[in-house]
Image 1 (cartoon, rainbow, N blue to C red):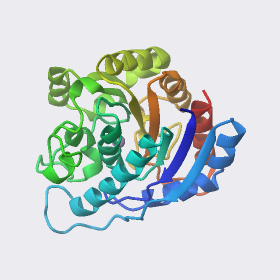
Image 2: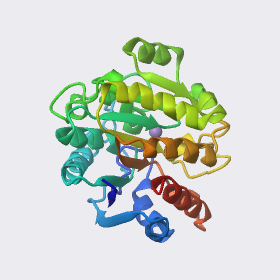
Image 3: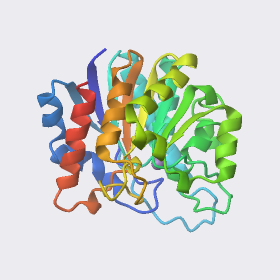
Image 4: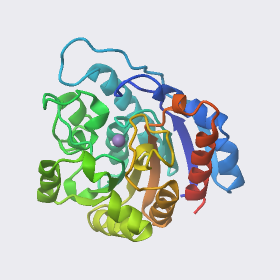
Length: 296
Ligand SMILES: [Mn+2]
């Protein structure tokens, strides 16, 4: 199981504004495919799913652009289920973080005991109507765990989409999670290692996430929101995260440990906004990092 299928998900439907829909093609233009090949990674590029661009939602709903987000996630679920059934490894290029809801739904059609390691600058615990932004890409973990909008939370036909014991969160910035959020996750038994622990020992933190998830899961997906990297190092995250202390090389070190596990079964990259990087230099750094990770 070492052949990859790359699928672009050009969507900003669940984001704060447009831009992320450009990421899959921008990563290709930054040489991702060539870098993967040079690293010895066998990858077929299946192109992009249909584009879905952010639109202002004036409806007043607590979950903005819910219909568009749900439609994209459903398409992702079908696409990743096909890849999983073929025995190959999906590499999803988002797109905003809501695509991971679809990825988990589709992955678990084929791997009912599947798990998820969520490498992200945020714990994404928002829910519609909580007084927050209403932006769905800040609510991914809530929906995976069965909270939030029923259309999304029920995408896999079972609620929750993911049992808490099959989830590990790695690298979230403690300044972005409330104490109530931390208590909620602790009470549910979700493995959480925040940014300071991740930066202090990326490989060790990754091993602890693996130990937690593989205890209760078979194969697992890895979600990587580029905003897990401090924007002072890599300013590609759609929503900036300055000062977390997590560098790109920390993330590479951690992801290499995850990728080396025999139950590793694919990667979802999210929240890259190419408009933050007009000359493409940071995108090329990210493409190099991905090739280093996937070659491991
Ligand atoms: Mn995120």
